[in-house]
Image 1: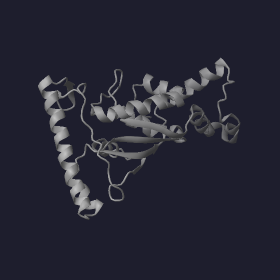
Image 2: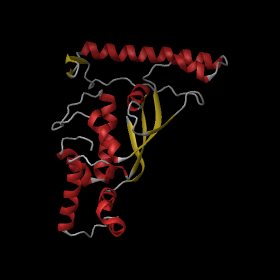
Image 3: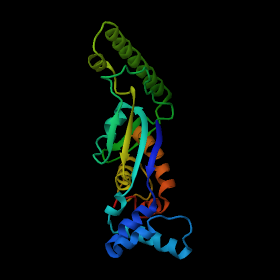
Image 4: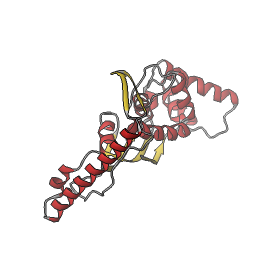
Length: 236
């Protein structure tokens, strides 16, 4: 899975000035950027305010920012992304361009066996035989489907028709833009972490994307990220 941060206008100061406008009005403009010159007392106060907002779920101050990611992943991962109606998406189109022969095949490290009941389950490693079966059948299905796709294109069939034979493990690419509040909601549902107030059971492939997005988030907004974790990874 490929996740790249394309651009970001996201900083802890975005949360602070948005929150303080309720009591300080236009005075918050004078302190709308953290420039590294804050005293230890100022930093403690800023961290405390962000933690208070997170803890008591005052969510709107976390929306005054923007992060745009480029994601390259199998189509089945994108369908899970788009269940989150909290972001803007633009995806590569199989109607307008010929899709390349790049398919996702689970590695040997990908757990294959589900144990437990829905809502409380885990995945365990597969046997050597199961791993070989999954990889062989996945490759065979992808090759067969792509050959059919190519035959239709060569016969003059429109791309939007020819693509219907392609499986959902073919790779696509898209841009995703969202704010920190939406990103925290996404991370709370698409990562499995100790200390989460509400356990989540994401499919591993979308979790791999979420982990990379989380790394960027931590670097851009460290106070916000710390408060998110301290308060059980619940989006405010």
